[in-house]
Every structure is written in structure tokens, then in C-alpha cells.
Figure (cartoon, rainbow, N blue to C red):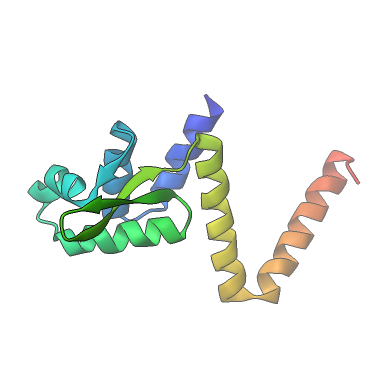
Length: 125
């Protein structure tokens, strides 16, 4: 399936630990940091690293989080984006935004030239 290939390509751009976290989240619907840590602790990873990376994945829009009341306060429960299509869209959006933030008008000029040339080549003006 084309969608699965896109997801695999997108996962290749994540760090190894981010990829591990996403793989854990894909096995079940929702997880708390402690649960993810329990699965990944054999890889000698600090729980705080998992929290930081989950926050980054959340800000990229690749995972969603909800709050859950617990003894002594509130904690986050994480899960992947609602659908593969949503995951792909958020990942691509995040990647493109980073390119534009880093390279500014050069990135925009490249996109414009590249996609205009493809449209002309395909006869779609």
C-alpha cells in the first residue's frame, strides 16, 4: 500500500529514539510516559529523554496528547495522529515549515520553480 511506504519513508527522517517511541505508540492506542519507558528501558534511555521527545513529536503534530488526572496532579497520555493521512500531513507540514524557517525565500523559490516545471512537463498549467 502506498500509504504504508510513505509512513516508512517519513519514519526514516526521525531520530532512532523518536522512531522507537512512534513504534511503541503504534502498537497500542494510548500510552503514558511510564509505559513507553517500560518498553524502551532496555535500551538504556532516561525517562526524561522520552518526555522531551514526546513533547517534540507533539509540537510537530505527529502525536497527540490528552491530560489525565492522577494522584498528585495531571499527566499526559500520548497517541499517534488519528489516521495515517493525518500523520503524513502533519509530518510533511512540519518538515516544510522547518525548511522555510531555515532557508526562507530560497526554499520558497525552489518549491515554486520545481513544481512549476513539473506542471509544465505534465501539461497541467
